[in-house]
Image 1 (spheres, rainbow over the protein chains, first blue to last red):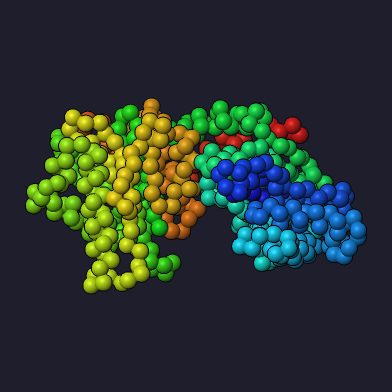
Image 2 (image 1 turned 45 degrees about the vertical axis):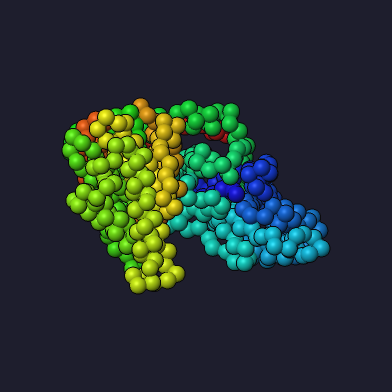
Length: 243
Length: 243
């Protein structure tokens, strides 16, 4: 399993993903699921993937190849974010089929993947899309300022309560880390380290990128102090009639 | 769907349940899922149910009948909590079969239910059991001081972070309400009002019972102020290297 979240606020975009992959409970590994594509001053994208690892690795390799070989379309040739989502969606469908080919893999294995693609192209607004295995996509919006893929339920309440368009970019990033940590704590199939990337509006490059391990100051503090902060918040709620 | 949580702390027991039932998204109703059985000075139980409503209503009616008609076993005749769980489990299996009888219902309908049964019998420790559709049961313990049934993922992180044996009973109840609210906010199949019941150790009666609607002071405050308290907690986390 996997948990990734992409957030749009007025100041820019936040991406956070875990790194655990598992074929079963006794085949657990660490693989990067957050992939930046940076063309400074021109365009910047972050792609996150949940699902079949062979499919998503093939997809990422093809995205890089298409730019290097200047195949059209590629991530530098698209003029609008929805076109990037369309292009990546088409490549996803093709990668899923490729992986299902009897000559390349086992029959009966689910080769599907679901993606989050976000970023900004010069002259365009920043945005985040969720791309389905069918290749179609939906965009985040001010009413729904975040999109999740994978094991999304544990980490949803904190996002629902905090994330709004006016949330500061770094606070949105801290919220994303708490959302990841809540999921990691409650579900074995989502695991450390956490990859985090920020894109500040109009900077057209990665504004911050970090791999958080268990001993990172932010992560260690969440483990040490988050429960205490929540306890204080709970204790400050109104009394019951019998108290 | 449904969400119920039963908590054991040193001071006693907390039970919280939503009240939404739905056959599909266009057949949504309010039904009580938290059922107290109070025999003051002798024993006190709370039963919560997720699953087929016909099954659980039949089960609750039978539990009351068995006490009234002094059938053995009944909730007043059992001497240990695990015997109560065994008895209720057997009645659950029987109620599921009863509901599946072609003369009493449609074939192909899932008549299963999962239960949480907690309470205290005079001279015994308080405790909470989860009873499976098969009729077997597991108990909460100091390492796992809460049990959930139904739509459990959204409300799990707050419980994982706060609930410990030393948590005060009323704070555990406030945490349960936040856990319910997180679920209600994130999932349409779980809805207000919320039923809450507390059993303080050795009181052998319900120590507090409350139905929380959207305009209850505690609930209204959670809606108004919980997000703000979380925002403050997020903002107090350590800075990123780029800040």
